[in-house]
Each structure stands twice: as C-alpha cells, then as structure tokens.
Amino acid sequence: MRRIRPARGSRLATAGIAATTAALLAAALSPADAADAPAPTRATALENAAAALVEHAAKLGLTSAQDTSVRDVVVDKDGTQHVRYDRTYRQLPVLGGDFVVHLNRNGGYRTANRATRTPISLASITPKLSAPEAAGLAVDALRAAHLGETLSKITAKPLLVVDATHGTPKLAWQTNAVARDSLGNPVARTVLTDAATGDRIDAWDTIETASGDGQSLYGGKVPLETTLSGSTYQLKDPTRGGTYTGDAANKTDLCALGTVCVSRAPSTVFTDADNHWGTGTASDRSSAAVDAQYGTDVTWDYYKNVHRRNGIAGDGKGSFNRVHYGTRYNNAFWDDNCFCMTYGDGDGTTFGPLVSLDVAAHEMSHGVTSKTAALRYSGESGGLNEATSDIFGTLVEWYADNSADPGDYLIGEKIVRSGFGREALRYMDKPSKDGKSADCWTSKVGSLDVHYSSGVANHFAYLLAEGSGPKTLNGVGYNSPTCNGSTVPGIGRAKLGKIWYRALTVYMTSTTNYAGARTATLNAARDLYGAGSAEYGAVGAAWKAVGVG
Image (cartoon, rainbow, N blue to C red; front, side):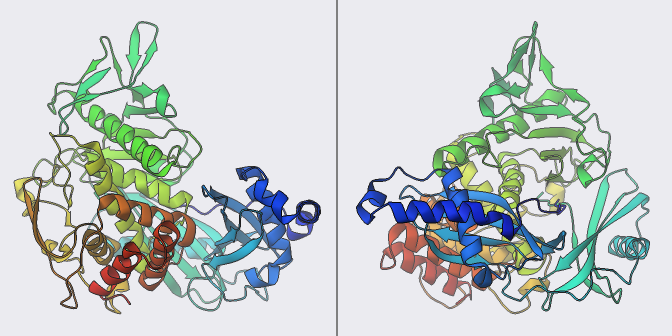
C-alpha cells in the first residue's frame, strides 16, 4: 500500500547556499585535482544535486511554487551519482512529479529522468468537489469492486493532490477506501477523482498481493538469528536491522491499511525457551513464523550481498512480519505505512499459509520499489511493479539455494493446494499458462489487472535469464516461446538481477511504462556492460521477443 505524504525539503531559493558552495569548490579544483578527489559520499551527492536543481530548474520543470524532497540516493563505484526526488506544488503532493538527477563523479549535471515533462501550473488549488463527496465516490467504487460481498467498517480518507500522470496536470482527490469483508479480512481501493468535476480519473486495488534454527513449513530446517531477553528468546534478528515476526492471533485491524493504528506492532512477538523454533507443521503456530522470518533474512541478504542495499529502505532498518492474520485469509501483502509484511493462513483448499520464500521476497520487494522508483500500482506501471516483485522473488529463491525449496520460475508453487487448479500462482516462462496473464505486449495490456499485465515483464525476465525454447532446471520443465518467432539466448540470472535492479533504482520513475522499462534496462545494461556488449544486445532482443520495441 502506498500513501503519498507531503514532501519536505528546501525551496529552490534556499538551495543557493549549496549551489554557491559547489561552484566555489569546482572553481578551486583543477581537472587533475578533481580526478584525485575522494569518492563522493551520500552527503556530497545531495549537495551536488541541490546545486543542479538551481542551475537546471527550467530543464526539470521546477518553479518557485514547487518544493522537492529526496527519496533515494545511489552513488556508483566510479563516483557517478543519482539522486531521486519527489515534488510538491504549493504544498500538495504531485503524482508523477518524481525525477532522478544524474551527476558525474565531480558533481556535474549529466541528465535527468522525469516521470512527466508536462509543466505543472494550476489556476487554483481550491477544490470544487468537497472531501466528503470524494470520500463517498471512493466508497461507491470500493463497493462496486466487491459487488455481491458484504462490507463493513468502511472508511475513506481523501488527500488533495496534483495529478500529473494523466495528461494535463489537474487538482485531484486521492482517496483510500478500506473495509472488511464478511470474514473480517481487509479490502481496499484507491480512487483518483477530478477535484473540479468529480469524474473518476483512475482507481486501483491498494493492497499489493501475490499472493537459533527453525523447522519451517516450506523450507525445511533453517538458521535463525534471534534475541535473548532474560531467559527467553525473541524471534527478532539484531543482525538484520531488528527485523522480527509477531502473531496476529487471527485478528484483523486496519493497521495495514493506512489508518491511525499503522504504527502498532503485532500483538505478540514470537518467543521460545530453547531457540529451536517450530515443528514444520501448521499445528505449531511458530512454524509459519519461521518461514516468514527466514524469508525476511534471505531477502535482506540477497539485496545486501548482491546489490549492496542495506535493508529494504537502504537505511539499515528492519521491517516486521505479522503471521496468522485474519480468518482463512488467502493473501499476503506489504504495507509502506507500517513497513511490514502481513500473511494470511489461507483457506486450506486453494492456499496454505502464504509464507513461502518467494512470496516473502515478493512482498519485501514491493518495499524496495516504494523506496526507489515508486511505480504506480495502476496501468502498465502497476504491471511493472508486480513484475519487479515476481522477478526479485524468483531471484531470491534461487539465491537461497535451499534443497527443500529449490529455485524455479514458478510463483507461489509452495502455497497452492489441489483446489487451486494449477501448480503455481504465476509462470515466468509462459505467463499465459495461468489463463489470464499476458505473454506479449499490446496496447490493451495496461487495462489488465496488474497481476496479469505483469506477465510481459516476467516473460522478458525469463527470456533474458534463460533464453527461449525448452529447458529443464531443478527438475522443472520450461518452454518459453517468443512473440516474434525469434530465438533468444539467455545471459543468466545474475545479470538479469543486476540490470533490473539498476534500472529500478536509477532510471525508472513512478509512471514508467513498458516502453520506458525497455529504455531503462538498456541504459542499465549500457552502464554495467557497455553499449556494444552482448548483454546490451540481449536486453533489446528479449524486449522485442515480448513485443516491446
């Protein structure tokens, strides 16, 4: 779930001190001195970027009516700097106002990626449609999306924003409508409404789904780092930012849906007397907790060891898990507001407890996306958001190298039951095997549910890693066709991960679509391997093979 908060940061006029400092430093250093200067840090990158905002305000579409705030900073090994910003207009969040400034080693401006290039200027920021009216429209939309279901405890919280994602920027209400279904489980929908006319601009589901040692449900016996408190061990990992797992006791609250209780911790942090957790059976409530904590650990290690990312937000701070949420709840989700993962137990017919490794990594990767490109959960960008989680969920599973849950290109295969009707939630090699997902891009892809429009990027990712045609890996057979009849060679999972991660963290923005993802991944491949490299060519060929480019 995402809730856009008003940006905080200095106005352009106050960035002059940083700009002056940067200019004086540049004048004082000769080219040779600059080459010998220490590698830039996050602080110097921020200082350099602040100067760039002043000097290149017109190119970035910045005016005195706008503020900016830093969302993320990436400093490459060669000193190249990339600073990602959100913006506000007259203190209102701008949807699609995000941009990334790219700087060379010496802090000089190179270029920028902007989610929108349309000038942002409104005649008025006074809405004609009231907040209660916007809330009512959002509640109607939520009911319509769950037609035939009994909903209770419905709330709706409108936020006034500037929408720059649907053509000419306009004043809009972004309203999160949340409720409980007949089992008490959460449902939610975000509705974007024109604040002048009351017309609906867009709407999307808000919950992002997927879906010592411990005996887990799905991963066998796994190692765990825990915290000793008195004579009792807590399922809290001090080596990974204090990440912990708690028992939601099959209760539901709206903490995970952006309401006033978002900061409340799980009701009970799991504890154990001998630091040997779970029995590997669902009858022991701590078994599911072992899976959730293990998934958190492996995902943390993957991002740190492979991509040098220290925690989901890159700040070294851990998140937390809630297991046993709701009643027969067939879902798992990440929530930015509580910075946590929540897992249901499943209904036992279609799904078991939704705590498998690839699901856990999928959910945590939503958190990585929210702290970097913040791909909007709607249209083609929403499909890319989901695909990003599928891609990294898959790569984390391969990274774990766990014989009890070997790597594969199936999503959620451990949690599905015979009543589901197929062996996995989604298939990377041929997404359409689920009966709903798209293998190839068409102009209609953006109108699909984001879990199905993600198929295009999932298909691209499989082809880039493994190539087209039949193949058996870890005992699973795959046969990935191309949309244009071409034969595509794979470059391996490691290179896929590096290219997608750099594209996500350096080049993609909130409104990136499939064409933009092609450009972003080509830029990433160029940066990592060179414009004339086999990897660069493989990225282009894989996108063409799924109908993009």
